[in-house]
Image (cartoon, rainbow, N blue to C red; front, side, top):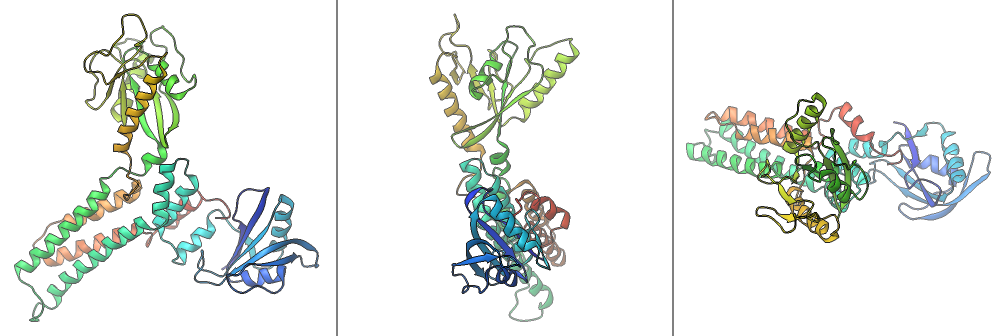
Length: 425
């Protein structure tokens, strides 16, 4: 296997740049630059020199013997000065050595997975952590990266293994006096299988982690000239939509991403809902109806009841003559001249968001993980009076859960994941 190297710290220039070397020749490569190496896991100052003996930089050198390292291999870190020229000359000196090459994106983490230092759920959590933009995203990513998702799935796998052992004992040692094989024993196993399936389903049914990353969809709906575009601009704090008294000004959906109180939202302005003979306007109405149906939160601005019972029915344009007060059924009133009314709307949206997002103290699964765990629960839920068939479905469930941890991950899936990482990660 090649020995790889890359800058694993922030983009230069910086005060310090950490150049990481990992692989079977890591120690030899570092020794060629720095001379004698310090004791394992002890930082020591060394002069880095090229093959001609020219001084490149003075850096802290730390040696990490495998397999108990970040990658599961021998690993060395060179803590150099973070100027571009320094990094370039150190990388050039490493490239000149036989058997060394620059790392590909995510290759350090991929080696950690290959060498059993982390599993797929932890690798995916680390990828999400690198991309996290909000505090809630960071917490969910850290939960996965630190292994809580992995521990939960491994616990399920252990439970399935124990259930399989009990079934196999019934099948293989039914003639032994110390192995229960009667109907009551079989029913007890089935009851425990149902209990495990319920635990898995409870996690699968929890809000998905993608809502943290992609943002909650907030769709503003109502008839033409009900104040939808004005509200979008006020919530987004910029003129994203054209505001006009002319009916049909908004014909397509306009989306504005917003982060508020650590929660990501995607605000969507829609075409006014109206019967129309204009084919272009009709397309806009259809898009609006689809958006309202799929929204996580609906802000309904019409004076007629909303299309969904969970919509926030808002009395808009409350600062206009004749629209004072809050009519019956409305959640609150919005006035363009009243900043407090917008703050109250944000508070109500945040309260709704907290019921739709994963809990910070819970386990949040990604879409593929939810689908896989759901299939495992289905396999467990399959009912048969034949112990052989039950044993086979337990085997299927365990294999599916193993896939969640990447124990049978395909190369294509790994390529897609690790392509999200920076070069030095």
